[in-house]
Image (cartoon, rainbow, N blue to C red; front, side, top):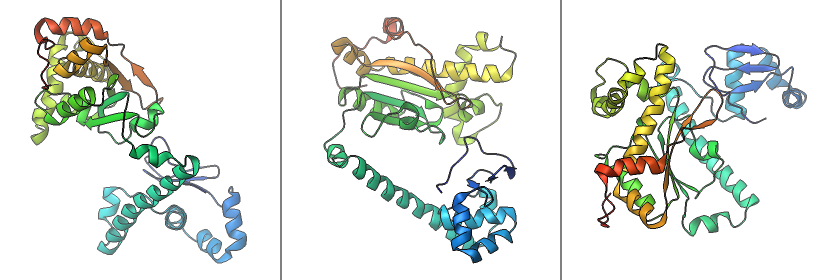
Length: 307
């Protein structure tokens, strides 16, 4: 029976009909409701007896170790374990990635024998994705794209700063060399970076990074201050941050010159929602934004290789 992870972690161990749920982790079928564990009971009676005699939470650990490789543990849980168990957990969680990778490679070869031959031939993606580093947003998975179809850059709060050589290099390479047709800046509701920027607190090393989001708030202060509901204000700042980062992409020479020459790429602003798993198109008026920006930031005349 494969492991199944819930969309949202539950704050406590709960029991639903036929299901055990562990916080932050894995959902397992109970022995009374699962043909799989019924099979185990028939073939492995000592194991079933051990399982029945074990407290509920420990049942999950037994099942996880034997049948789901590694149960995830929070940092608080891990800190409470003896050093030998910490070392064992770290090794198991490391090895799980290679087990998953081997299984994935075998599945790809079984479904598409030429998959890795084609993958080795090079990449020609249509999309550049600039997203948040949040681990809950796998870009290819939520867009239905596969390897080689999307060039991806991620950072905290999906920022496009002209002083960040990392993101500037990504934009330049994607547009000038990969010739992507779409540049997507994708934020998400519930963004921790945006929330941190709204918090009047010294964030140490993060201060200069978060200041870019605070600057977005300053630019749109009049609109945001009229929103009384804090969650709606937070969501709107997420959207406005995406819009401003799209403008920063449009300001680059690579995008302006490529669009003037061939009519692409087009820049889009999207927001992902955890509550429904859907992408929201902010419907950026790319041509209108480009025209407005080029009153000051027109870089189409010089065809040099800078961004």
